[in-house]
Length: 84
Image (cartoon, rainbow, N blue to C red; front, side, top):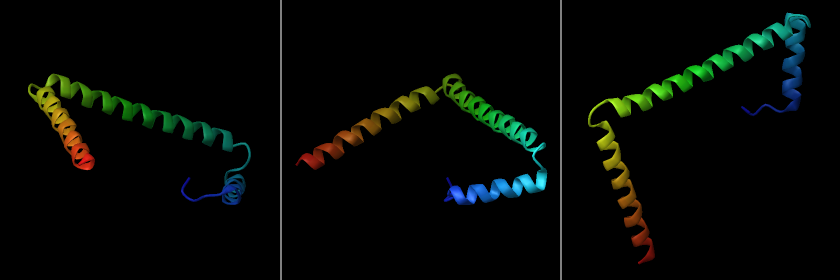
């Protein structure tokens, strides 16, 4: 996780306790957890809207299908080259 080991995390936690105090840390942790949850939920919403765009826009679904076929043929061609 970003090259942080246990000693570094202990030092960061110690500094956080000194700066914010023991009583404020649970509130900060709760707020941080809610923020991360909200961020993940926003990302999921964006992914779902992207999928709905693919289904709703005319021609995009067909282009996606053709791209999948081309990718499959590329893989078959690469495998046949390897086998020769």
